[in-house]
Image 1 (cartoon, rainbow, N blue to C red):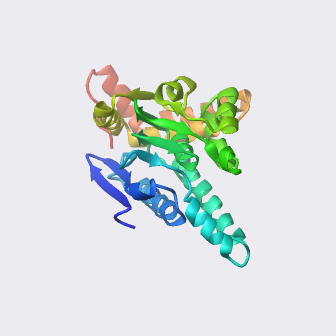
Image 2 (image 1 turned 45 degrees about the horizontal axis):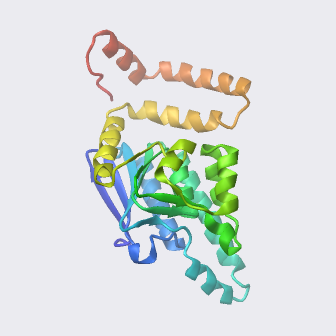
Image 3 (image 1 turned 90 degrees about the vertical axis):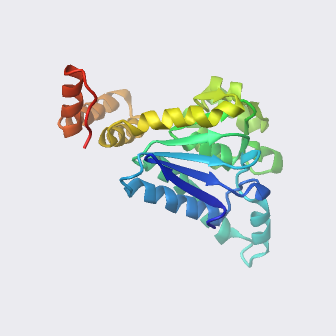
Amino acid sequence: MNDLINQELKNNILKITLNNSLAQNTLSLDIIDNLKKIILNADTNDEVKVVIISSTGKIFSAGHNLKEINNHRKDKDKGLDFFTTLINSCSDLMLTIINNSKPIIAEVNGVATAAGCQLVASCDLAYASDISKFATPGVNIGLFCSTPMVALSRVVKNKHAMEMLLTGDFINADKAKSIGLINNSFKEQELFNEINLIANKLSKKSTITLKIGKKAFYNQSEMKITDAYKYASEVMIKNIMEKDSEEGIQAFIEKRKPNWN
């Protein structure tokens, strides 16, 4: 499995690379479980301040491994137990990304479909090369992209999400940016450097502040606006009491760089 998912920690940035281009970087059950373990470990590793998920080859991820799925149709229960484990594990992976205290960035240089597109939508930030394409094409093979729909519908407006889900058609990087699936797109040769600039910028921020902010963002997004303001006010008051807030404000007043703990 080590050769199918590569890891590199440099300057407090953990680069996770899906490295199974021969299988289109599909999210088999083993890949999902190992990716989840890596991301969970990053959450508790003080050396990691930012996580990037990238891939090798022309396909970022083609989603679930359909050969693996079909092979398990031969099981005694026609695959029900395996399919339940697979889909639930994939959903857990996406929640692990959202619940992780570190910012997680998708670096897409190629095609992201189905659960691969779900992976992009689940990351806190997503950037793509200008050759990248995205789709939720399950409808074309009789398997509606229901779990990718959860992530997609939370970052993209309903009409755009439904268009992708109902047609299964590909959209290019420009369209993906315009509907909010990705933050920005760059020329292929510029993508690596641009994402490194963003990741390095985030790595210089207060870890505790990013942790507080990321958790609060996802929590309040599911609330009614009055409840969201009440919750966010409580979070901000607690944040003000943190040492990093005290140091950051003092550094701003003194016109110097903050010295985070």
